[in-house]
Image 1: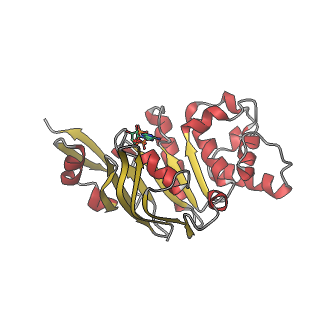
Image 2: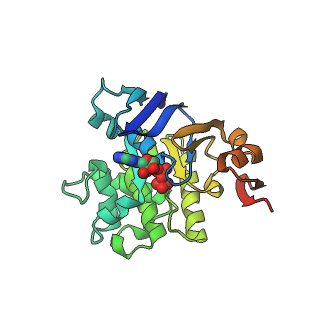
Length: 258
Ligand SMILES: Nc1ncnc2c1ncn2[C@@H]1O[C@H](COP(=O)(O)OP(=O)(O)OP(=O)(O)O)[C@@H](O)[C@H]1O
């Protein structure tokens, strides 16, 4: 089991931000986490990474039971790519340096990488079709290219669980599709980490995401196989407005019913 959350509640003052959340992610599954602004997605990710503890309930991630296991060890096994990381990296560093820093989970590269680290960075860049950026300064990349490099950086630590937190934010349709295609490539690799893809947008959900969790106002609205969860009926109930669902090449587009 990759993630096992049982009846987790997280309260801040008198506000219940996560309410009785149960979620099991098994080996070999890739999940999409879908919810509107303020649904509690970030709170749930913080719970998974051990940055906050549930007020009630149990959380076990990659066999680490919260309250009983050393969380820094767990965090080494989890990659978390979010756009806030983009601003924290040093723009003057080369793409290769940025990727190598992923091994040490550092902002900037302070340790001398070994020959096999450099080889690994090269292989990741080649696998993801990003070799041409290797010696470019990070700040010269477009937003979409930077997102690709952040994902490559996360792979450098060989995570068991890779969280992609709204990776397509700010991308145009072409950059978005390129990034999604790269994520699809990662999902199909034989030793792929378990992926958790967080988004507000149904149309970004790739077929490689076998399962989907719909989070609404801090509660699990539905969780299960993507094909069962992303139906017109479920999404209409979830968004609270009549929707039409169109399936195109195993992707979904939604529009308001007129
Ligand atoms: N430390 C905190 N104290 C009080 N309220 C909080 C705290 N952290 C989060 N919240 C509230 O919990 C709710 C869920 O927040 P969260 O950031 O998890 O939502 P989200 O689904 O990630 O939203 P978005 O898509 O906009 O990033 C929000 O109403 C937020 O204001």
